[in-house]
Image (cartoon, rainbow, N blue to C red; front, side, top):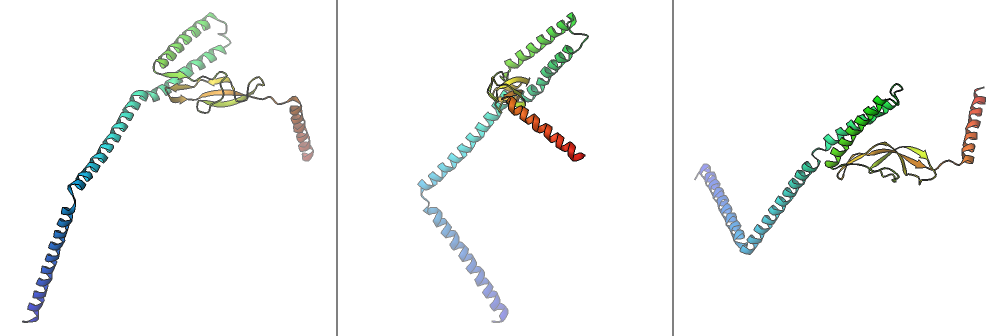
Length: 213
């Protein structure tokens, strides 16, 4: 037998051995599958069903929450923008009050009556849509609802008590539309301490003047 025939026979033997190995592996895999009991297969199926149900339930809850939020707060942005109308009404009133030509005139009183009616109607509409003003009078400053713009000396109230409302704040149900801008109380500086501060300030100015000379 020549070399070519020998090599050909060897290749055929190797291919045959490979096929036999694959058959053995398939037989072993089939044997392993057959070793899984029906109870184990049932438990595996139950686990898959439980996981699939849990995922479906989570998706349903997310959908319900998104739907509720859209229904409850769908007009949130519109309500926030509408607050500018109330602000403009207040600015118009202040501007008219400071007009020397209109002060104490009958025309001004009629204008104020109309502005008050418009403002009351708007606030009534807001309330019907669960938009409420944030309370500020004599309340302690709460960063969740109030924003301090300035401090006013007042020994009769505890420091941090709201003594003046600069701009009204509003809530839409449990969400903040905008904080109330307020002034809060602080303790007055003692007269002696105040005089001492003034004297120190005067001395500093004198020293600066001498240095410049």
